[in-house]
Length: 461
Ligand code: SAM
Image (tube, rainbow, N blue to C red; front, side, top):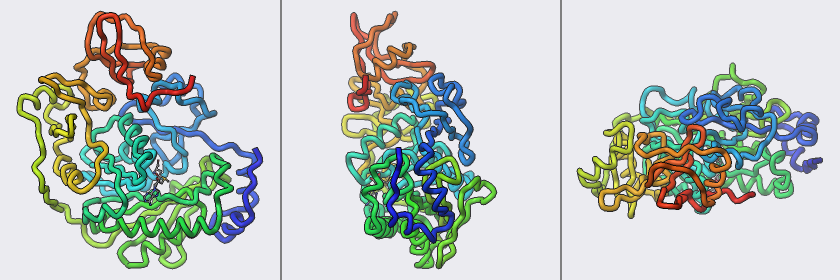
């Protein structure tokens, strides 16, 4: 398809570093967007193990341990492992976040990280794969309907050190100096994704760029107080516009509170390093005519001051814990029996890693939490009604019987259809496809109940 880029757009980029008008236009008319995936190292060690993807695998994404290009774009919906959280389909340029995290975050200490603009969860699932299990990720999305897809993707990823919240950036003022790192993947004018979404071209205007730039400043101003002194701010967009990128870097540094940080240039591979006009802060630009990926910009900043490693916070309300006997029943569901504290949450039980427990309680008293740790399901008369969240979690012990199914039955299950399997046992069981759990079923006399979450079921034929 011929993609017509407006003159006003092309002209606005004329003085931007790395913009090469003819090659840029050619990349938007001739080249197809690239398809790439990022593995979930907790579930899939080797991309070739996914038989659905194996024949499509191409080279590795140079700046991510977990990223692979594909030779084509399959219907991921038809790969049961996609629904099991084995990988995430993600645009390759944005995987450079991994370099920023690896190079700029302190090592060997547990961190608290906020992904402020997180839906649908590309950056959050990536951050989770990079940080240590003792670190806590708060994955926030302000727009309510978008929190559902974020929660779905985080649940499938299967980690227990993530809290999903649905808050406005200014709500994070209630958590002064709480985070070691804040990632702001800001809403933007979206020009970097024109090749993937040609309809977005018509919505582009200089006015929209300026509007986005103002909004980006507001979002950053709202959240900066939640970052510790000495903490790391990572800012990114999928826009090419100077006003949304280097100008924002200058705005961040204007107060004197932040300094820009470089991300090792030896790994550039066609990435353009820029410097903002005033503060000379480094930023990294991705152009589709220079590398295999779409448009992207990322920059890293350090907040001045020394981090207070013993930063304390006050928990006002006593948590509603479960009884000692219930704790024993619940702990049996995990490989590491003493790793979790159990919290009542409406009718459900949350399993929260003990080292993160106080931080989660603090978040609970200040934010609107959509998901925290592992929602295990309901405990009724000492019997757990296990949840989808629990069986997709990597922390679960092998305590429920497995039912191994073929691709057709796996897809029927994911469509929430009735499924037929020969089983010699009754009761709660995990439906497994090629070694990865897909969800939970209950085997009864003469029928099988399918507990796949209705909202997540595959809708196509
Ligand atoms: N980080 C996500 C990922 O990698 O999957 C993509 C985030 S997208 C670029 C920007 C997000 O910011 C959207 O989910 C959007 O709903 C959210 N957003 C929109 N307006 C916002 C605002 N005023 N404050 C904070 N977030 C906002």
